[in-house]
Amino acid sequence: MNKCRICFNQNELNEIYSVLEMMQGKGDVFNYFLCSSCGCLQITDYPENINNYYHDYYTSERKWNKLPILKKRLWNFRSFLSNYKIYSFIERLNFNSILNWENSANLNNTAKILDVGCGSGDILYEFWKHGFRNLTGIDPNLIADIKNSGINLFRKSIFEIEDKFDFIMFNHSFEHIWDQHDTLEKAKDLLENNGVIMLRIPVINTAFYVYRENWVQIDAPRHFYLHSLESIDRLCSQHGLQIYHKYFDSSEFQFIGSEQYKKGIALHADNSYLENPKNSIFTRKDIRNYKKQAQRLNKEEKGDQIVLFIKKIGEN
Image 1: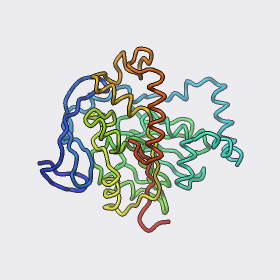
Image 2: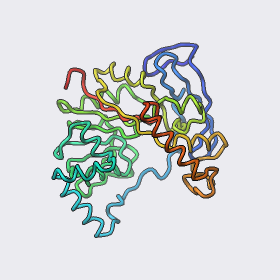
Image 3: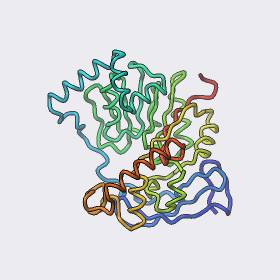
């Protein structure tokens, strides 16, 4: 009998799924169970040799150091423009994630930002391009600390951080974290007054119920938790937190990856769409249709990815 590590439900009605590792195509099998109470899908046991299932995620040198001088100057100019209202108007002609997050979290360019599970720091460099300068990233799997261009990346876990922040991001990192309760509680402790936590995570929704164990976002064994809206809301409430804003940002990837998995095609196989679109099982029409379906599901709040903005209960 499996006990839910989110809501602590222990019920024989929890559904069991055997899921193959399909990113690298190792084919190893991992058991997950779907909590009958909160709806969170979670891996049954902590995987042995979990580091064997990660590769090429981290670099000791940021791409910024290798950028052409002209591109660096363009980024610097863009950063300069970000201080003026016309910049926001121009950017809003097309959807821009960083500006959307900035508005949703009510940030200004002096905000102290922490990226938990930052990898090589790509997201922080996007913030830098938009005029932010107080940027910190942490990841226990970094090869070494990296300091350049006003961005500090540290080989640390969140439990080694004592500073306070206005904005704490888990950008597709929270599902990789085993200690969900302790991690969220620590993040809350690191918030300044009226600070915001952003969780960008896969979510149990239409794609899961269509594809089940072949749903690409399970990503066994790297994703320990696939939350439902109910389970993430319960988790936040247990720690004195509330979700005040959310939107869905799923893409055609939910169909491309899942359809491939149904046919035994690994994400990085030679005939995978991500590696060789012309050699894949999909036509251009298929991809167009998948994009339209993803857009529709997001509008209906049925997409398989969600962005959540979270504050302490009682704060405006």
